[in-house]
Length: 160
Image (cartoon, rainbow, N blue to C red; front, top):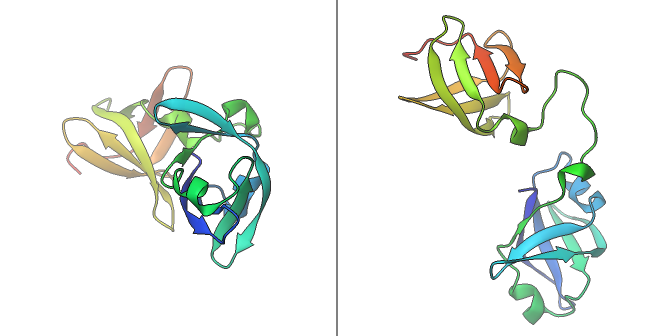
């Protein structure tokens, strides 16, 4: 999920957007968006968009009034992975880490990556196994990530 349509803006069908991009306004540079409405995938084009105070607002093709816009409030925004820029070696998109096995430096299986959280000071991988582990996604705790082998090695005690 790249963002969410989370409110109405004005009388011409504009919508408020919650963005997971950094900076937030970058969500407007990815086109088209894909949304699922009533179980069916649709492609949405952005006609116009901008920062409006602390939020992002957008005018979407085919959404011309508040009544139409209200029907898509709460809809998650997705894009094609091919729309994302190539990353430098050693960096990964969060989506690529979900489901990877997490093993500590002693060879103990801790579980699989369920999700990631941005705490403000660093990212944390949430590992679900016998117990839930919140492992900082930074050195010295992060030892290695091997996407091909679907494995992350961490310096993390199994009882912590």
